Length: 312
Picture 1: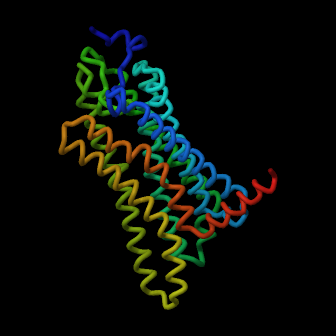
Picture 2: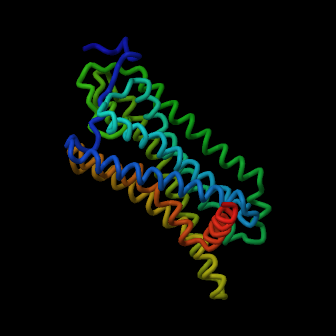
Picture 3: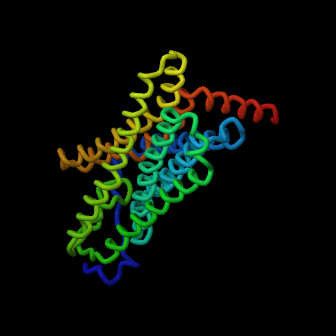
């Protein structure tokens, strides 16, 4: 079927994690639980930060933005998967698929850039503590967040604009649980070379360079910590960086794991399972990492929950 001129009526089929009907209730329950935990956990982080004046600092401003991104990332992927399982209808329209492709690129880009900005914030806080509030002023913090969103919007639009020129005349089955760009390109019958080149280029620019920025920031932080004479000062500096480093390791570790799995295996099921770690598990674990390893966030959550229970 030649679908190049009728993309508005085109539908793809999301095969999901498994076609075994006996596994569908388990997969539905598992993903629903993870989705609810992700949304609730990140919302609690945002509410705790917004309600506690002690947390109205640049570090927690960036953290609240990261939590919003994690919530939105989960919303763009998991609900559609749950609906498909519940209704036993795996079809997704071309426009819905295009929208999912856009946001499944947009929010990971925001994650990458926000984690880089947070590393810079920690670098300034530890290496230039006396000038921290001057450098990390509200105007700069707002500008940094605006730039991350602008880069995310423009990059994702560029991918989508190239994708919209493609025609599809092959099997429309996507061996994944959401519309992922590389899987869509495999179904196209037109030239996908520009799309592939853009993916490689943007992966290098928005994947490697932010990681190098994070590594550079923490190399300077480690050098500053070694020069501290006070053990209390070292402990405080390490505690403020521990949560961020854990989230960075989880984010990049799962992302690299997905790409490594794609490179060494042709099993679509294994690739989909690896993607679960990157798209679902990581946003779910981030609030736990920050709440368990950060005394300020833990205290703010405790005060928030105590106020909530006293109102009942």
